[in-house]
Length: 289
Image (cartoon, rainbow, N blue to C red):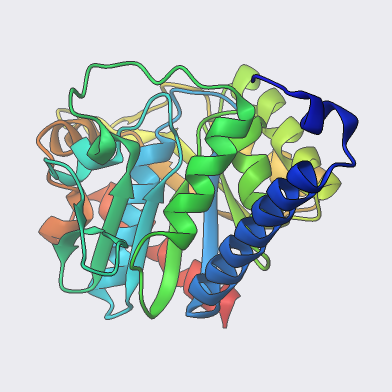
């Protein structure tokens, strides 16, 4: 950033006026964010200690399941470097902007609105090369400059780990609660413990832990198959003093439906994964009451 004598001195009328203008703009943005959040009853941050555990598919299907129960739901994808929510939800194109200059979320159904970084890119294959402050800024815009309206739930899909994005949400969204997703193997569980300790450090309440890709019945013989061991999520939850919400079985149909842009929970499919995730969603609703 270029500097001049006024800025360097820090005491001229020019720099004071500039600083005052910036301060006023920041204050107005804070008020807009507070106004937007005041219209949202419950905020759910979906986290994982590492990638590849199915976090985004669970965030998407959780939002769909809540909307099918009649709740007004927003789904906000703050995985800025690897956004996948728009693809999972089958949403294409850029966000529209209303006459009030607020962005209009993509409508998945009558009860579910979606915002993703993918919907801001002219070319979906373009990389997002940003440092922390830029990422924090766009998350602020996702909250304050989007016409969310009145919502019962805002489901926020964050990137893996404990970096800028979940930290920004924890600091920016009072009352948010974390849903942590893991798989049963040891390497994932080690990272989950870090996620739980992150939540404790930033005073973000952990709603519960979900174990994904758990044991499933072989479609041929019915024998139980464990791809990533079993029971690790339940043990970790007990050790770390958080609620264990349930185990979701490994199910290839989840991958297929996500690739097709048709979330499994929107199909009212009576599959083991759908049944177990609906049970988890019911516990989530009860925990917010």
